[in-house]
Picture 1 (spheres, rainbow, N blue to C red):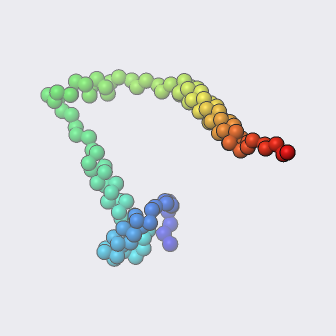
Picture 2: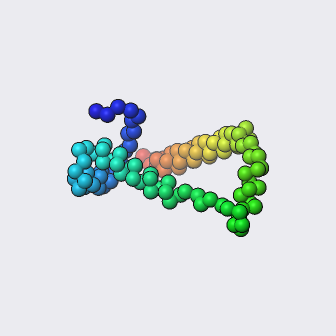
Picture 3: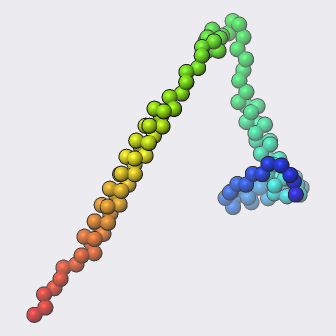
Length: 119
């Protein structure tokens, strides 16, 4: 068993079947080893493709990039964002409660059957 950080993921059966096919084709010992190899290759490809090109003097965007680097970043409005999120959650929960009450009322109305008078 290998030591170090541990990652556990849930995957659909079709993905596990594809992982097994890769494992058999590359003759890796286990699913974990095959998954590590594939994850490493996928992340390498991702970071290679997403690498930013350097901007040099004379490029059309040089002045913009240089200005952005010199400007201080604004602080994120955490308190305002948290307050708005709390309001949205409260409204969502109230709306859910109203929907539940309405569904119960409709069910109760449907369950009530007229009583027949006996002669």
